[in-house]
Length: 337
Image (cartoon, rainbow, N blue to C red):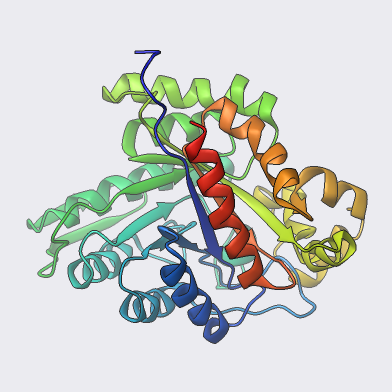
């Protein structure tokens, strides 16, 4: 087996509704399709990670528009939280409809959510234990509804009665489960078709997340080595490194990992706290580059550990210029595998 060539790595782009308005992101999707980028992930937020200069487009209507305006681009969420503001049955219906209209071009990224989405939309922020239990239950309910059968479901958090989706996916919809901890990684292996994380610490990935994922794939009988492993990487490219850094400062708030768990939901407060992240930290920890060689060097540790897809949150001063670079990086990486 070791003599076989490695599978190709996907390099994808995230449509970041927090930073870019939906009309411009629609143009970006068309450009991705024309450049041969295979997949576009879209953030699914109610509120952004930053206040100044932010945007706040809704992911679901945007997905329909983007799928209709492109020919080959596969689009999904990174990620949807079906635990509070979205009922799992509604998530199941929306994605079933998209997948019926655009077969084999839709996937669902799913996770426990963040306070900045759930609290401002009228919900209390649960404990981590409850969020995890809600997510597990939601996944099971969504899968049941996608069968097109009549569903009666009475769980700890969600109940539906005499429920049936009359429009179901023509083909299975892949589910990618987001994880920052071992239990969520295990859940991805048990219930998902792929694993997603924005954890950039390679040691934590190797020693905590991937062992959890491996345990989950063992329980479900899936092949850990062939299981899709997806990394989200905030990115900014410009030949002038300082311009690249300035453009990615928007994401400083999201670099404070506590905000993914605790109830800090006001973008104004997140922005205020994000000021502690300096430019050196941005350049060191994120995909901030000024040439292709730098990009290859920054990607190598994540390729070595076994990620099958890298999703760049494109925060570049010139987003199309970055997409052009990504196509070059993809060819270089996959020609050498």
